[in-house]
Length: 485
Image (cartoon, rainbow, N blue to C red; front, side, top):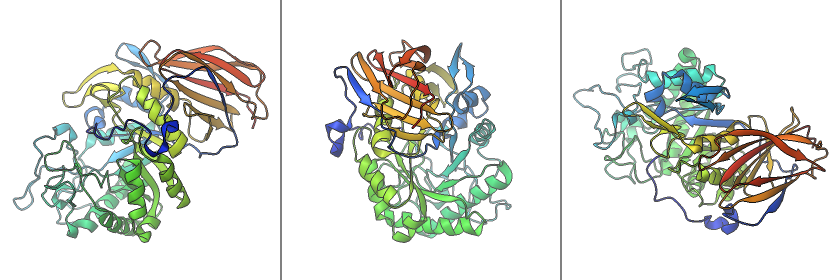
């Protein structure tokens, strides 16, 4: 989430310099390895808060994010990103009074980041009672419905903070001490009830089946304080274990045994590993998927997190990523690092609409104004439009190239990011059983905005090899049909 330059790392941390994609080097060749199996790709997505709170009524934005159509926007046409994953936030805010008590609002939290919650007071857990307001949060729910209508097929419910009245200081931005739990101990079960009731109500009334529920967001972070800029809550690992146990019981009690728990959405790869291994064995057994955020950027031991999670038989997602580089070059660098070392099966962007370089499209969610499309949008399109759900992620041969294979279509997809200097890259496909000599399709995006997302048919495979010149700071995608393993 948008707050942290402090976590930006200068290098690859314990991975060593070899873990970071090269900034500049001579022309080179990469040998694509089809024997590697880094997982079946589940998809690409976005969290809906906060941008959908402001823009939930916009069909064109739904088309842009959740289809692969060519969509008119702002005097141009955008290639839809084709996202299929939606992370829906169960808000923590309400404006009602409970026995004279009201929500405490951080002086630094804009209204656009105060997400309306559904459970108004502690009087009743019955969703049909006056304690619940199911008309809340209409814009975010509207965008989720638009996403579903456009083919989104994976839905996740998550929480940035428990409802304000469950918090020690009634402040959904955090406590007086960012390193102390702000969920009252007697409300551990109530938080689990809240998440389970929303999941059940969504199934019965919104036509949305949440496959996953996550009761936390960066719970071990120390920056969730009463003067924060957004909803947040610290949970120590012992409390996380207790809430996971309670959430499983509350989901099961409401006939949602098929809904799985994901946790803990820690901010960094190293913290995610520590938290996962610190959960009680009982709680760890109830977690089906580990979510991690990518705010350690070029740092952190992605590989060790992957090893621990997969050894435990869990799924692994990068469930949130964002930074303020509007060129998209840093996005490509860190996405490539994730694909090579973390091996997630899904990847989710945080705020597709946001100010400056944070958003794929510049937007002010507070004033309701839209701005320019950042080159970052077209960089991400190189990945999302071509590496599709159901493909198997394989080894592209080096850190700058992501490779995926579509067995049903006999199609190989290669996405390469080139940094710093112009060079020619040769792709060696000789480890595949059969690759036809033919002209292949390619798409090019220059992060300086020179080429947005331009398609070409000018590259030929010959003898299971092809070469392509890359201008500096360019991302290119290649689709090769008729490839046999």
